[in-house]
Length: 215
Image (cartoon, rainbow, N blue to C red; front, side):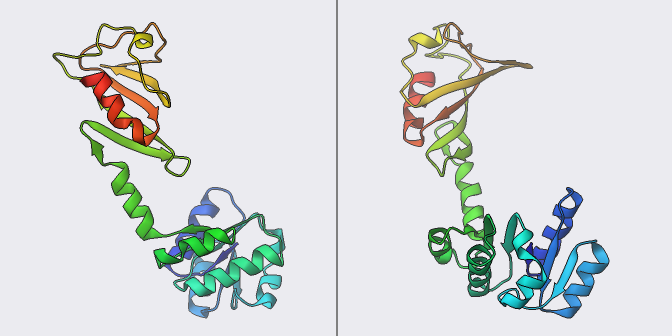
């Protein structure tokens, strides 16, 4: 169930439908409703998604997810609250245009998605600690998947079994890339100069990981 038939809502409807989902869109603008109806086979309801009548007409209670993606944070909040409290929709997702409103949405059990925050996270996830590249963050920033290239010469950790390296608690090596070969490491595995190491670590342990592996 999508509230909002603008660029975000129409693209979302097309994308989800292409993946096999049954989609219903609630949009107050008739022209946008007609455009979505011409591009998709989604059910389109012309009306205000913040109004109980139109959510009833759209049969919001049948939805697995209610996504409010209009350009108005207040409307998105009201619509999601109505879907959750009145129709007991299991999950509500909202587009948040002002990142300062994210906390309010989250406290009310609504998954808030701010493009500003997403862009900032993407930038941060590619930042480095020395030669460590953060590929992804997990568990709301409590874990990070990182990539580290070992030096070709004077590799401090090379030729030493992994079990003897003294890796910090909260840090696990998950793969070693050596040329075209991908190795799942064990305690007896030995790193070689030029290897690329993929690890899962607590963010505050990244500097210790770099120090141990590269000196």
